[in-house]
Length: 320
Image (tube, rainbow, N blue to C red; front, side, top):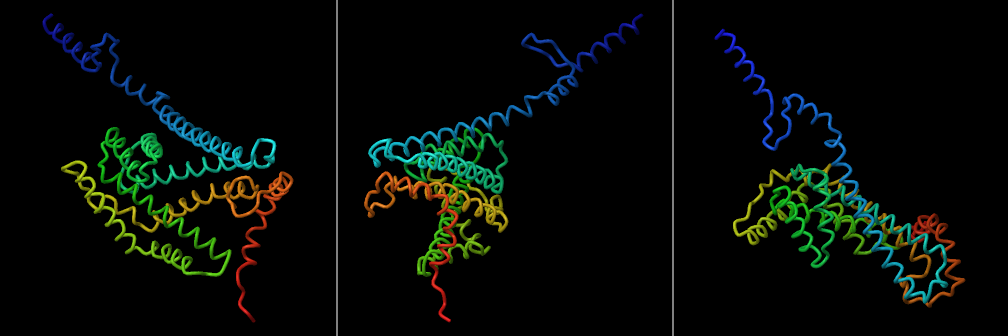
């Protein structure tokens, strides 16, 4: 009889050990059931993507609203009324806003790519939150966005200030090299090669050398460590080996191609707006009439197709 009671007590203890206590009054369930629910729960796989999509759509909608509002005000002020604006211009304005959203998405993807190459493994949602929070601060241009992003990443993900500062400066370096590449290509195709074109192409060529990229990354890391030490007092320095993948040729080439595309996409929209003759991009030229504006805006698509050929014809040809 005593042996049977001991067996029952031992069985009850084994059952209790396989269950999870519920101090809040919920029913106790075996750990295997809870683990199975966690694996099969749709929230773990769909909540994060939905949050990321909501964040991206919200940022894109805000960008389109600001761009469309500013563009509308400029058009109405410069043109003198809605009736003097050709209908083609509004289509180009909508296209320019859409292209700006595409550019913003490319820049956000580039930011996530650079964070991963710097050894930062955080959810994509948190990476987008930090990036868009930095875009909300434009004054001062570089210090404001670095401060906001560093604060957000430190609070949410415990990322050192040095890492955020290095990635931000590296991103700006990519923008400078991409702008030099676009300027060198456009100026070289439209006219004779000058000193500025050669300097821009030399900058792009130097960025493809591994020693130059390594030296630039070391300099940016030194600056970031000094800034972190001045801000934090103690400052958590980051070793170069943790972010060395940023200077790799493959990572640099992918990020540079993305940067060039992110610059060219909104430039196409601005070019379409300038062709319509509404915005004051050509202030030295006399104001066009409504009929001239409509004619020039109707030829925008044809000019866009003929522009590469016209730029090629302007290049000086060698005398036979």
